[in-house]
Image 1 (cartoon, rainbow, N blue to C red):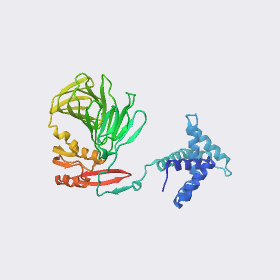
Image 2 (image 1 turned 90 degrees about the vertical axis):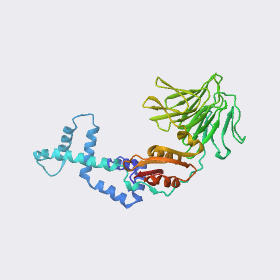
Image 3 (image 1 turned 120 degrees about the vertical axis):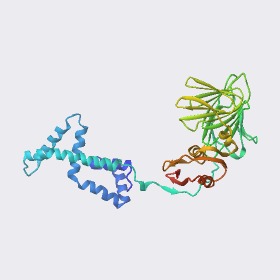
Length: 390
């Protein structure tokens, strides 16, 4: 039975007898949809004595008086005296607590009926066999309000005051306003490379937002990243290149590094070449090549790593080298736009090897199944989910 929040309000107003003409028409239309709707409302209205007590209880609750139980007694006794047949007062007084309790039970039942969550049968669940990569287009939003759907086939973006594709196609002409800022958003299954006005190159991973000025000022190179990006920063010792990401600030003069802020609780910065300085919550770190900084719970830490484990995605590959299953599935979920759900406690599992990200999801999962992990792919109410078990 379809019982939306609007219909619930109409039924309550119908019980209280204060439906407007428009609301009466809306309720009539709903009743005409199904005999089940009519039977449901009739069942409520037929219990007149319960409805009367319920309305009495509601009116008392809305009263400014805090002693509503006494008012209930008075109203009940007044109703008794108005009846044709005499009833002994002492007997009625003994029944008043039971009447009040009955009202509460009826009200609780109605609240449950009107406010309960949709039943599982209403969930639109579909079992999926596979997910092919969609050719979704990245989007760029300019601070002047202009929104542009980018053409992935035309290659990288090049910024030098104007905005164009690598093949020379002009997107946004040169503007006099040096403060014009662009925000690029990449969807699942999409990568994008951007050449900034200073010659620095930034490669964006899927589901990433990157904010940067079309023209840098004379004394500042500042960008913001939310997601994952690989930076090749053009050298300029006079004007450091700064990256804001998830509560931290990265400062470099010329280097190559990767930033991953997919998780709001934990972000990582991996240095490939050069050196970088990081600061967060009053802490500072300096990274050397083959080192990684992690910001977690407001604390900065660093360790030695193999950068290839963290930057293979720029070659459009999943690369696993003693990678725990949860980390691997997080990367897969980001790329294919999946919600990962673990059906039980998964034992420690580590993966090895590399997989092209151009493959369909089923091909990737077949490889992972070699580690005795089982997967079920479904879609519930438009959300794609990967159920994991062993």
